[in-house]
Image 1 (cartoon, rainbow over the protein chains, first blue to last red):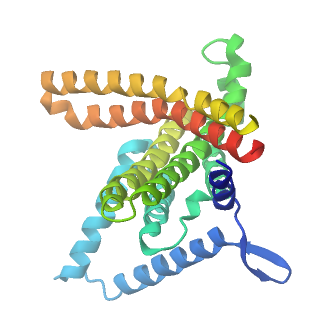
Image 2: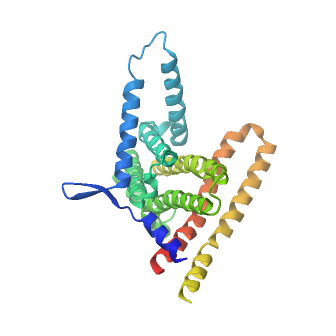
Image 3: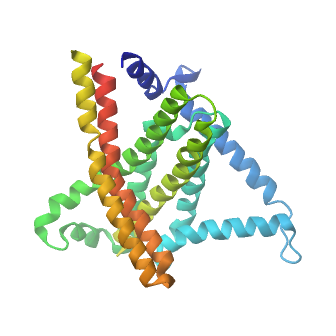
Length: 225
Length: 75
């Protein structure tokens, strides 16, 4: 019991991996930099020599991947919110890689609550921006009193509840999967963890990335109505 | 004595999983029925099922987070 508590506390603590100019840089930030570098290099390499006529195999695969990813977010946002699809696709890509990076031995950045909180805050800012952009400030304020003025306090509370639940859902899922995997590895170190890792690391990680983007898109669509 | 109480508290917090399990079970059963009735609407139904499951699952996750915080902060 005490051992488990200690181990869990160790996992929850986001220790600094290195310090630059007296500011501690936590491990999640470093892993995020690694993801950024990989995505940047990949996009630089993959987008070289694109042709309009006679596209190569690489370009066809790339076009297929980009179109299907953008199709997911555009499908959620609907035709009105197309301008936000690029952001959501980037978040989907980042979260997908971040949740899967545990396979390669890195610590998933989404296991740090600060990362999910930052993503959730960015989401709520974008949701409200989308609402203001579409409706104008006056109608945006009025929308808090819909459908009746009585529930205005609840609508204001939702400004806090939405990002909180987005943040906690992602963080709790990733951490929960991680803790369960640790326990399984503790009981049966060989063989069995591989089967469970398929579900907890790969399937659950991708589903949670999709759910985060899906809910953000849904809230944006709702704010734009 | 103290650790026993902490363990009981964490166990009670994780009971939120009951609600999430029942909720997701009902949602899945209805989704299966809906797909059986209208196979052409499968894409839309899957999307809605995923959304509902994510929302229902959130309660279980909250319980888990609370249980974890109980273990970490009190032990």
